[in-house]
Length: 269
Image (cartoon, rainbow, N blue to C red; front, side, top):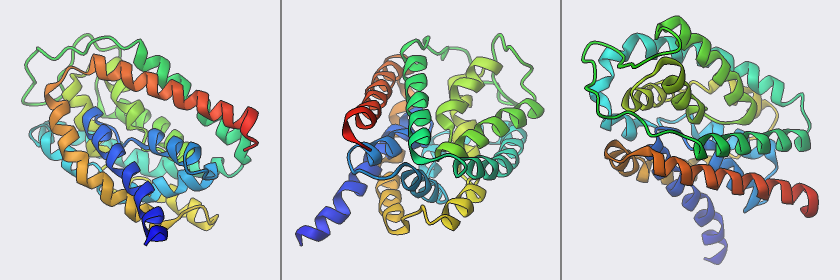
């Protein structure tokens, strides 16, 4: 009994946490899950990344997207463009990840956590008061014209990053859509959740599976926990201002990055 609980509980708890936070922020929550698997469970970096990519083959963002379903049709062209671009790019990112040994990969992942932490600590409050455009993307003062071609380029970049670090990259897509296109936070979250709903990381999963870097049983447990809490996080995030949450999320990312650094410097792994 004790062995069964030790096998089931840690990945289930990770899934529950990741699902709630992912739904709240409009992301898949993979950076948090991978970091905790490496730091708390002692996983090797490639294996943690591959297992989380396997989790993301399922409709991880489905319940969160149900909360935002009224925005799907106006954003359909952007979503389709993003899905196709991400699918192709994730394979390239995963191929690159296995050209890098575990320690450098862990150090670059640590840098990603630091970058996410700093970005979220410095986040400005999202503009949520303006009415949503019923016919398309809602934007204010965009740096780039919000066209499908720009969504394709953004998703190529985040797809490569996602395959390389084993993340869905929604944590990057949301701020990019808001920062580059001036998108309303609800539209940015909808785009991220919708693009990540299909198995867009399939190409990356193929590479990780060929390298034996996926624990399919653990992936299934994490997925069940994730789906159990994702909808509730998304409902809460629909109504809350994200500025305070983003700062707390940024602090968590910085602490996880420091924990990664401590493992490398003093933990011997």
